[in-house]
Amino acid sequence: TLSDRLTSVLKNLRGKGRLSDADIDATCREIRIALLEADVALPVVRAFIAQIKERAKGAEVSQALNPAQQVVKIVDEELVGILGGETRRLNLAKNPPSVILLAGLQGAGKTTLAGKLAKWLRGQGHTPLLVACDLQRPNAVTQLQVVGERAGVPVFAPEPGNGVGDPVEVARQSIAEAERSQYDIVLVDTAGRLGVDEELMRQASNIRDAVTPDEILFVLDAMVGQDAVNTAEAFRDGVGFTGVVLTKLDGDARGGAALSVRHVTGQPILFASNGEKLEDFDVFHPDRMASRILGMGDVLSLIEQAEQHFDQEQAEKAAQKIGSGELTLEDFLEQMLAIRKMGPIANLLGMLPGAGQMKDQLADFDEKSLDRMQAIIRGMTPAERADPKMINASRRLRISRGSGVAVSDVNDLVTRFFDARKMMQQMAGRFGMPGVGGGGS
Ligand code: GDP
Ligand code: MG
Image: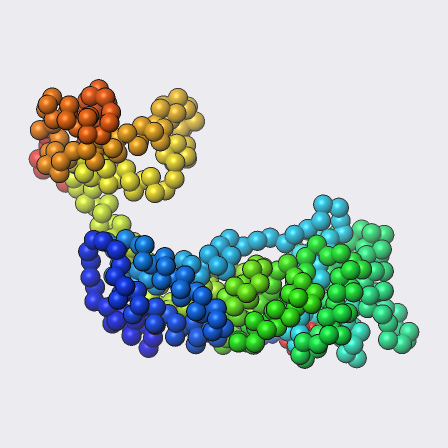
């Protein structure tokens, strides 16, 4: 399989420095195949791979992952980022009713989605109104009425027997009806054509102009694959849209259309439809879609395991050292950098219970003093970091000059380090951490 190939492309090299071009190229070849197999449009694949190479070149070699895994991880992160990071919520009007217009080709799943959205919105305490503006197909209105009944949401439709109604007029009247009867969201279902055509676009944009939607959702069948780009561009230029809904994700499509559409139009994907029943519907999850497109679920979980294992190894090593009093300034620096990756220290400490009363101390623990500590430790020789006891007065002077701080700062740091080490060792003893009883300082 693809994953096997990928795993065997590169040996498990661990080292320092940057990822090599050869590593990056070899892995990107596999990624390219994976994306094309997922039906991502070719120009999008090209642009995406270029972006990945750029980022991978700057990446430091990971201690926990081999280069192939590392590139896959970068690809996964970029995919999640492009697909939207966190999911955007529906844009609703300050003054109801909000108007949501659905557009897309015939058979994309608009009418079904209208019912799903209506039910979902009702579940969130909204009072939606479904509006039948597909007056093209003979049974379209009835279809929406059936869907509305299942969703428990009323349907606004033209009076029967009036011949073919005017969808623009129906849309306009539905807003007045929503205002009158206090519906807070109007969901407008429109007609589609089998292919993109001008009349379809004109009708949809006339409806748009009549109701000024807060959100225009482009409904796209995920099975269309390579065609996604053309269709999305046609709807972007013809009607414009503010969000995308992918349907038929219960099929075997790997979902490349998601990446293509997002890349080409920049509009976010808001929802995912995955079945014919009204419940087969969810907000869009970029992380799930990324691993579906990549089709390397097993590689991704290996990566996760490798990282967790590595973190655990590191933590155990640190605990061992703390317990035995062997903690060095090198470890201290390493831990500090690890913690800093997680965000400002004050925020972290602020999350601890009872930290509210420690506000003053927390304020002391500012980022500047961390920068200073980091500079001081960096100014020490490896031998000094490993055995802080050797840091005598003349060494302190040298370190202070080298790192641009006062000698008293160096003194402070060394004292605090010894205090911390002693305190941690005592705590480790009390909590029964490993390594206790052996050694001592
Ligand atoms: P419209 O022409 O855009 O209004 O599309 P419809 O809502 O009428 O859907 C066309 C067909 O696709 C119908 O048979 C639906 O049951 C089916 N359909 C819609 N959404 C999904 C989905 O997410 N999964 C599957 N399997 N079928 C769907
Ligand atoms: Mg329909």
